[in-house]
Image (cartoon, rainbow, N blue to C red; front, top):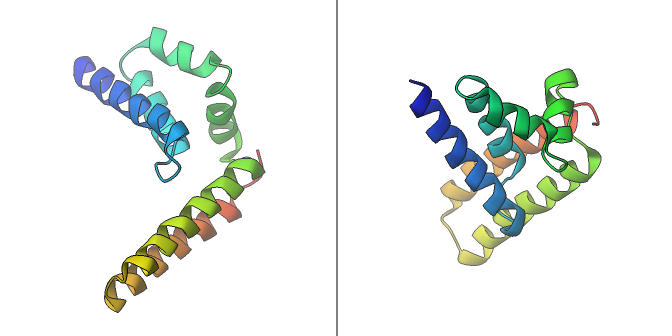
Length: 117
């Protein structure tokens, strides 16, 4: 079972790292998932992630307060708007746009109702 958790953690961390360079791929949720997986499989990887200078503070903010930093909130909102804008430009069917707008709107509300990190 530990091997499964380590594999999921490494996959999540990899997607999170890719998300640093790819604006539409979220980094923070994948890093949080990696921390969750590593906590169940590898104390060494979990401690490394918690003490990492870039990822550690984000994980600590979330673990202690359920908080998201204002900078991350702004970046997330811009990414959400970009995704919806691309969908509009692509001319997706109205039903898809409505479902997407509702889903992305709920995600945006969730992000902005979290405490600031």
